[in-house]
Amino acid sequence: MDFTETVTSTADIYSGKVFDVKKHTVTLPDGHTTVREAVIHNGGVGIIAIDDKKEVFMVRQYRFGADTVTLEIPAGKLEKGENPYDAGMRELREETGYTTKALRSLGELLPTPAYCSEKIYLYLADELEFCGQELDEGEFLSVEKYPLDNLYEMVLNNEITDAKTAIAILKVKAIYG
Image (cartoon, rainbow, N blue to C red; front, side, top):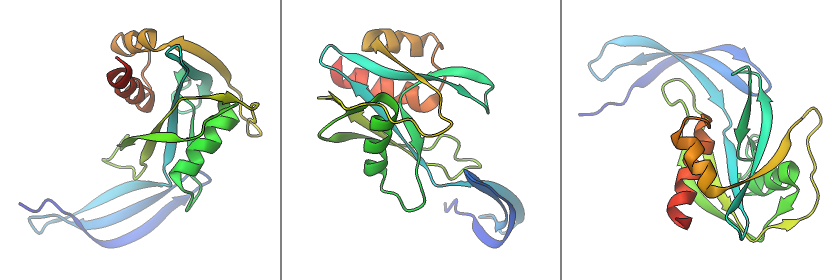
């Protein structure tokens, strides 16, 4: 069966700094029509940076949408047309103060595909070298290091609830054991 929905019209609802909102009229596979509201987002990157002792660099910061302080992997949004790999290298340097010779892809994830176009590209950084933190204006966070095994347990115990962070930790735990 073809599950594809066909967009027949689109209306702009909101245009913002981080995302836009659109209202689409769609034709369903059975021929009926309905409305879909969608958040249009350029996407983002998340970088799990691990040192030779299997300790992971994490950032602690306040997240307005959740109204809480979270513990996450370094991450950031993509600018329109920005290469995800380049954004990953930039965010690693800006948030942690570390750089690496190369990032390894851990794949992509769709955090909320029912209503949001955001795609997050996950990367693994190792062989780290300190170069100095370069936070964006208005960005406030602390960098903390945790053993990979502890982070794995924190994910399983629901102490880490950020989706990109949990997925990155689980993937890296599968790689490093």
